[in-house]
Length: 495
Image (tube, rainbow, N blue to C red):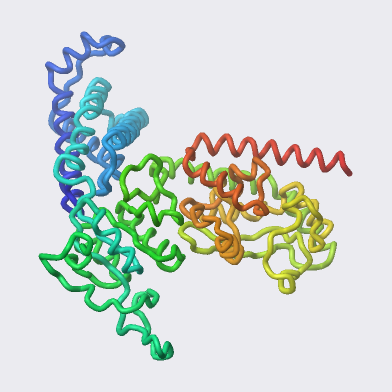
């Protein structure tokens, strides 16, 4: 497989050439005659051959629109052959419809219907073959591989299982080892790593080293802070992670860098407890699901998020005013309550809710899961707050977080960092939820599962991550709206 900028140049160059060739072939008089005579539906069209400036415009427009729609395929990320074919077809359909829509609204940019249809049909065949060839026909699937971690023993165990060209590894730099008899003499470790003992000799390069100590034959390329530089400079397309602990500062920071650069991430099966791995993987090394969504799905999801937040806030303006007045009249405290919540890759962001508890009560009790989640009565909750919680109206201000892009309408509910840490210590792989943007509602919420049952909630959240799609989101939203309306009716009847 080609890597780095070579892959991008070859991939984009091939698309330009193939799109231009497809338009030229579709515009040929013979092609036009055959297509408009023998192909059903299109046999009612008249042959339309363009030339000169009109042909040049058709070629440039096709290259721009279709080439732009294929943008995700220019990343040198290893993919299975069928995934490559389906993604190419999906993006090509988007480009074809965009060209047809543009021509419909602006005659200046219109490409003849027969030409457009034939060109897209030809590209449906040749473009997937092109991307499959440059991804799979020019070398190993995993390409140039880098091992990254802070656990040298894990790196030693993983190295022999990497069936690819390993160009080196990154790990923290130890200035000197910690003296066993005097820990006070420990020297700080660079790149955020922890002291793991005496690493002397790990940079040796020997041609006669045993395969079990393959790490001795691999060059150390620096500390963890050099990850982004090495990915770019060495054209890396696969990184094997070897961290002793999946902490936010390093592990998820590395995943975020890999996601930004379109690099494939792998972990050893023995150390995969803290990550979300792809199902069905074979071998000792398995893929990490850094990005379960296709970029086009992200566009639809984000568009729906903005539309939903704007329309809902507009409709609820009178209710927001009434709720604000009720909170203020009850105890004279603040209307909104600010909390830090965990987002993608373990980062935090602020969320706002209508205050439902006594002012500053958590200064005394600390952050904890409300007893109401278990069906009990939480004495910290005010009278107005109890109504807001039972009807889910306290969540309305979080629509602003959706507009800001920190949250989505649908996704795992974000939890407070201190509670995340507490749940993680209980042996629940809570950090697997951090691979997607948190949401206002989710699969766990519509099934009445709360943070009081973190293990069960995690199963629902991971099920959503694996099944997520735009239409699945719509189903969850409709069920949540029905649930809110039912709770409002139930509350009214109880009163």
